[in-house]
Structures are given as structure tokens and as C-alpha cells.
Length: 335
Ligand code: PHE
Image 1 (cartoon, rainbow, N blue to C red):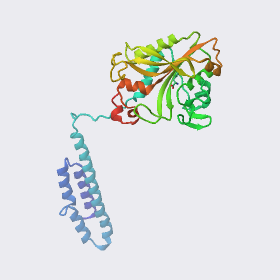
Image 2 (image 1 turned 90 degrees about the horizontal axis):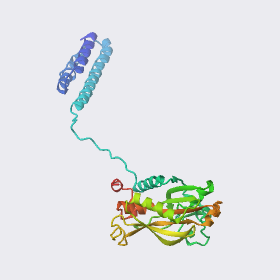
Image 3 (image 1 turned 90 degrees about the vertical axis):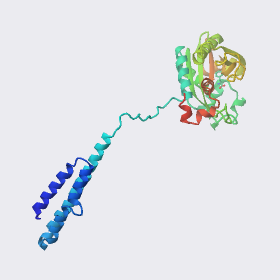
Image 4 (image 1 turned 180 degrees about the vertical axis):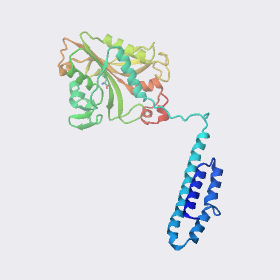
């Protein structure tokens, strides 16, 4: 074989390999050209028999023959495999489900509270998680010796900064920066040095409410909380006030919703009392108005707090607050 014949053979081989219709004919084309008894042997024979001065050039051609035909075989093999997998794609197979995320139950309750109070004209306010002792305690009429200020119960960062123990300091921030009337709710995280158990967590959420205007009364508070309770829990839920004490409200109450499961008859959810404790509320204390520069002879106001986890647990039937924070998507995805 001379040089030109080798190159012709190479072109024919590449052409034939490239046109192989399936894996079997590709393999026989490969054997025909590159196999132990294939045409490549003719090329190698020519190389062996060539005079010395031609060996260099023939060697180069023989090498090129082998590598280029092998490359054509590999390329054809890939192409055949690719089209085979398209052809065998079963369009009747069920699709793969990539799970959709869900909103966290705590977020769902907060979103719903924002929506319901929005219907009553409340807008959303917020404040920092790291608060000053002034906003968290002093301005809320909580004296220096009040037990809630004890470092056993409160996470202090230094003498004048802490992780807020409730969302009530947002009341102070809002009143400091706006003139009355104000009508806000403030959802957010709170922190207390509680030992964690089924109903306590060192980190939890509240929704604060504040309504200040001329002639706001306890009846307004009761009416608005009743509206909220019925929207959130069910249409015939009732509300009850029990006398209580908070430094920043006077009078102060704790309020309960009638049990949305047994409607007051007594069941496991309400621990057979017919009522479910939600949180505290009251009429804004004149000392608080004084601290923010409001004139308590001009305006009155009510304020309330509510525990978000508590509502989430009752409404969604979650028995242990820790389940809300384990971040187990099998649990969280149910809501
Ligand atoms: N801040 C109180 C608490 O955390 C709740 C509350 C808010 C009470 C507003 C009265 C008025 O328990």
C-alpha cells in the first residue's frame, strides 16, 4: 500500500463507521478495519516492508489511521447511545415529585393575624429583637425591682441591652415616632430564660396590638378581640376577661377564648375548662403615655399581646411546642 491508498482506506473507514445504523454494524465495521485481521494489518505490513527512508512518513500515516478510525468509532457509539435513550424514554412513567415548600405554622398564624387585624384597620409595625432596658421595661412602667427584670428570666447583653422579653416595646417605639391616633399590630420574636418543656421555649413569638385614639375603651378591646377570635378560631367563639396585673396597662386582664373544639362543654384541648388562655391585655397606663409624650387627658388606648405558638398549637393540634422548632419537614409539611 502506498501513502495515497492508506489515506483512501482511512476515509472509507471513517465514512463506513459514521454510517453504521446500530451497535452491531458499528462493531463489525470496527473489526473490519481495526481488528486483529482487519485492514489495519495491510497498513502495518506496508510499513514493515517499506524502505528505511519511507518508514518515518508511513509510520505517521499508520498511526493516524488507527487513531482517527478509533475516534470515529467512539463518536458513533456515543451518538447511537444517545438516540437509543431518547427512543426508550417511556412517556407513560409517572413524573418525579419535587416537594413544594410550605409556610411554617408560626408564620401561617402570624400572616392570618395580620390579615384579620388588617380588616379592622391595623397596620404592621416592628422593632428590634435587641432592645434597650428603657423600651422593654422603664417606658412600660416596669420598676427596677420588678421580677421580670431579673437576669434569671431575661437575656441581658449588657446593663442596658437585652433580648426583648415581649413585643410591648414596639408600642413605645411606635408612640415615640407617631402622633395619635395609632392602630398597629407588631408580630415578632421574644426571648425568655425559660427551661424548655412541652409548653415553654426560650424563643417564641407574640403579636402585639395597640390602639390609641380619643375615647378608646375596654369595650373596643373586647369587640376587636372577639372579631379576631371568631375569624381565627371559628364563628361562635366567645371571649372572656379575667382581672390581672401588668405594669403597663390599667386595668389589666388576661383573656381566654371559648374552646373552639367543644364550644365550652369541656374537652382535652381546653383541659376540660371550656376556655383557652391566650394572653394579656388592658388599657394603656397613663405612665406609659407620659413616657412617650402622649397626653392622657386627650387620648386613651388599649393594648394586647398574644402568644403565636399557643394559637398554632391549639388550632393545629400540636401537643408539644418543641415540634415547631425541630425543623422536621415531615411534621411541618402537614400544615
Ligand atoms: N406583654 C405582655 C406579656 O408578654 C402581654 C401584654 C401586652 C399585656 C399588652 C398587656 C398589654 O405577657
